[in-house]
Image 1 (tube, helix red, strand yellow):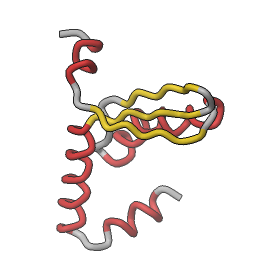
Image 2: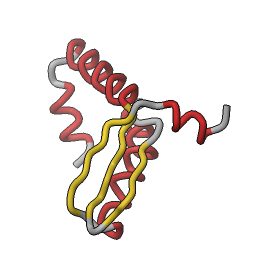
Image 3: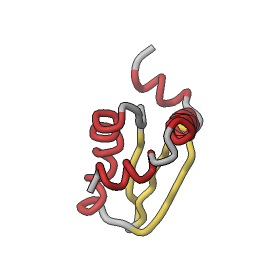
Image 4: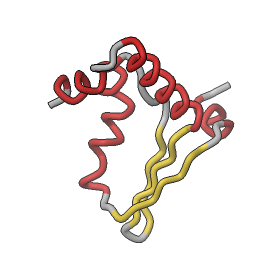
Length: 90
């Protein structure tokens, strides 16, 4: 199976908001590249597109569930984990 087939098979969560490509490239890049490097977990894919000054992000539901579970697990082990995230990423 190739990457495109994998993306088509995913169940996606859509989020839309006013935005322009110039200002929103960084967050999408960070979700895929920096988040896993920094935290050890993150998104496997994100689709971003623009139409009529609206930005649409598509997040894979399986990624959202995995990230939620990882955050809850880490917080259960260390209730200062959220404080660590804030101070570590300033």
